[in-house]
Figure 1 (cartoon, rainbow, N blue to C red):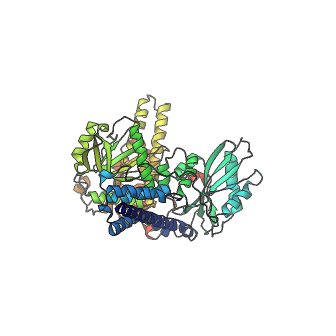
Figure 2 (figure 1 turned 90 degrees about the horizontal axis):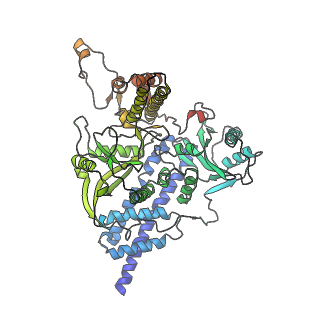
Length: 606
């Protein structure tokens, strides 16, 4: 019996070391998130951007730390599978009364899969399903703050309650005029509740953690009245005089979905019990998957865990097949999807055309840049996975042929539970959008199908084209304000979301604007140069000639008219050089996650 007791002791020590590693990670994560409040109060915008970027690396650093400790102290990779089963059982015991059990389970999986062979990635050794419920977790410490606070306004004292609600956050920066702003919020809420009787249970519930991102601070809550409720957010910004203002009242699910979009940077929120925040947010955004809410809160690894569980669940309850994704095929990425699942899977090809001077590592570096950068609502977030298994019978043969031809190094066929399995060694997963070129082509087709130039279908099609072109230009300008030059600006590299927003998703040629050299095309010196179909002037690797965009983008007359009406400045060197100069001078642009029309007073901000 003595060896068994010894084995149990080792298993417990391994489990305890893993829990210590997770607790260290989450403490550092919370501390960095909490510092966002001070950075906001002191207008340290560059510090906020650095912290948002650096925090993304915290998780992998702690996983590596913990893995090294287990190998150094316990020779974890040499332990028997019986020991590892005991490790998991001891770890479950340590999760009792833990405030972040779902995150700790994911951390256990990350460390374990770094040590064990892939053949052991099963429920005996990792948490394929959660072992501990996150329902009704409470912080029992007397001095702890609850997840949310409740306020009980009436029609007569709504403004007063809103003032108290905001003062309770204890921001150390004065408002320019809080009573005035509270009155504006009251007016927006009153308008939302128009023709609705106020009920006895009228209340406002507000999450006690503030949400910080870039130059903004967001109060997030919901209003309950009778049997109805809606979520809201109040963006707090610095005005030109360094005082706080409430910039808008974002009311309802659609506004919040834009605020928490997958195309925006992660929030910094100081949370003791993250599952309670996710549950609260899911009640006001029921259409948003929980995995995307976790990611929006900066807990991207937990988002990946939940996404993969949802994906496996979907596979078990569907029968359609993976196919080559619709649209123009990319030169460096092979893209496929499952029609019934709202995501696309992107694999880096092994071979690229000669005009694509790049490598697998450079492409992965571009995707990492986007992950760490402010995406300003214009670049899709990606989930990155390694060694992903798919059922072989769910793949169309055309897709298998495509993978075997263009990405053979990323493909492995193995047997799992008596079935052939396709293993993709490295894959990015993104939300599926309508490619902008297809969106425009549908509008062109609708316009052409109307025999009358001023017929209803033709008018609607032209309006759709104009909206798409305006959004496309806005997307490029938002990216420029975030120091991103898309590189390849063709319509096919942008997508349209369900909210009609245009988002960029092809990252292999992006560059920082501050690294680009924006030039005018030199004047031709001879008639031969002017008539030449070849580039006769010298071009360095980072040179960009904005006036050359037009021939590739504006072949359609309707598109040209809309583009020149709204975004002709994108063809001018002065626009790009102006952005570059302001960024180099330290300016941080304002990019709002809501329409300008929602702002109370769109004056110049700090």
